[in-house]
Image (cartoon, rainbow, N blue to C red):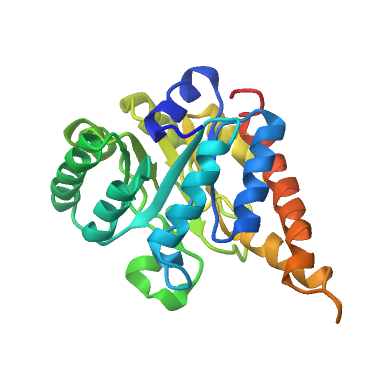
Length: 280
Ligand SMILES: [Zn+2]
């Protein structure tokens, strides 16, 4: 069943678990994630991101994923991740996404607050939740340019001010993770995370989750993370399953279940590390 991000995260902090956002771009990935959530009785968040749009439009992703989310036997939030263009975020809201991330994390604090406040109004008027980002989670891919690649750690006092002034439903924080494939394991600042949690009631989001250790995930959840984003890991798992099962006589159709099964297996593993099994 389709629910908002606010609804899906509401018990996370009190009951010490996090809900996974597993970004997906194909039917097989989406199906594998939803099968994993149903099998573990876990709530789950799915959806594309602005940077994943060129091969399919927001409408294409939405038509496929909205129907699948509605038919799921567990709570599912359909999330548009890292929307940078306000027009696209508004479009996601009007298409029926139940959650959008409006990412103004590369702008100065006052401008981030101003733009987020305005988008929160738009989203809430349509019954949609909004995630914002304070500080900046960088990228392991340095070819994207220094402004995007370099992380800026979240200042706990700024996080409190941001949460209070914007009324956002979830807040992404930068505590040492980065997007993409890690060359060396990251060192997370759990002390900073605990300070943010103590100052800020808004559910906190960890981006760049692919490749973290089980211990890191569990510590993040203990210290106040409510939502963990995974894309790179399942993206690689899906491609690897296709390559490993391919022969001269296998076509795309024959590979569908292989990809679904591989994504399902890895999603179940993450759901268990996040502690959301049985919480649906
Ligand atoms: Zn992210």
